[in-house]
Image (cartoon, rainbow, N blue to C red; front, side, top):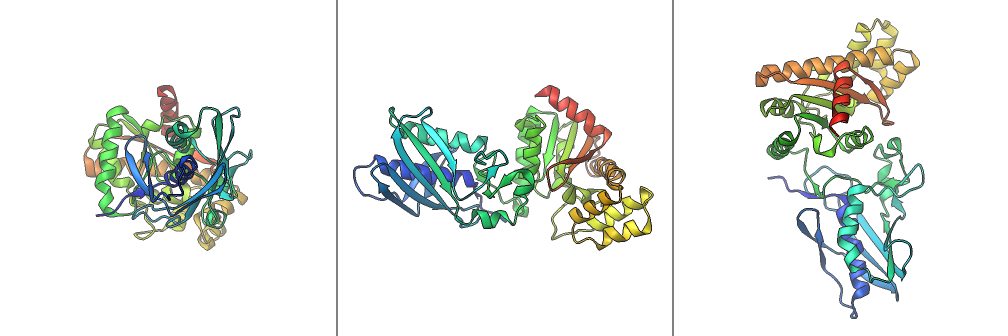
Length: 363
């Protein structure tokens, strides 16, 4: 059975709590672990090291453990440097140290759920007349960020403390499909109109579009199975929201988007180029591209991106509806929104436009 772990914010908060707790102790006893409120639930997180640096500052270190998830942050050290000083405007100040990303505006890339975790676990430990300044450091964060598309989504110089829950689920493991179905069943009881996101970037864009988190379903690569599940559980519609390099597989009838099972992205884009009236040289340019993103950029230069990806979005929705009808024998309205590596929406079909208006009105 696949083992779940925790997301990066959990380990950052654990290190901060260990350092702050150490400052409150009058002994030099080290903390082997801390108990965290995960909102909801609790977890005991091991602490690798903790030390007082000065009278009012301490440093603690944890190691990221995402479970059996395929996550590049596995065993990554997270440091928390905590300083106590006379009360400032706020009791708790969070800073992005080395390796933790910053937004384009220069703000720490520490998002809502992470901030809630910090507040829930640290505020009660801060003396009434003092402020705790917490700097999170990820020594390998800047290097690891180069292997992600964070910069394209406005996160610079490192990794973001991002997530909507504390649990890091092994979404790439087949054993987790049952758990994904259970989560979907919970969502559909609250919302008959759902939004499917493959990864965290889709969730970010859903938030930017003003879509309620309670309507968002994380699918991993199991889009086909979960679309059928949504139909069988009574959902009225699903909005597919994702990076074009993943979702276009559905236009070719590939409903598990894992790269280990099938690809054909360039071939799928090429077929859409032909349908859009593109030339043979345009098809050859797509097939010669090394990635779906490079193919998209080639089509932008050829002024073909808009018609080609409009065709792809419409085809994805049509194929998805047919898939649900075939395997679930139910009708499900499906719309598609495709975005690029920069997080900019490329296109959306007519159904997606209707669903976005509906989801916005339900917020």
